[in-house]
Length: 78
Image (cartoon, rainbow, N blue to C red; front, side):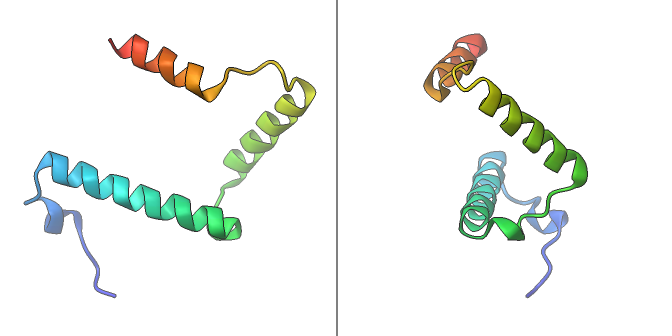
């Protein structure tokens, strides 16, 4: 596989680079969903995920639905 550097991508416009980032992110998410063990997690992130999971299990009704959270974010952005 050929190595691609940032300088190789500098000729792309900002929207093109953002689209590339989105495509890369989606490919990582799909692979992580299919094979979670392939996603490297450092100890701090692993500990935070465990903490959040335990918090959710203790208080499963003390959450904001994703749709509402997204609406709140969009409203805050104007």
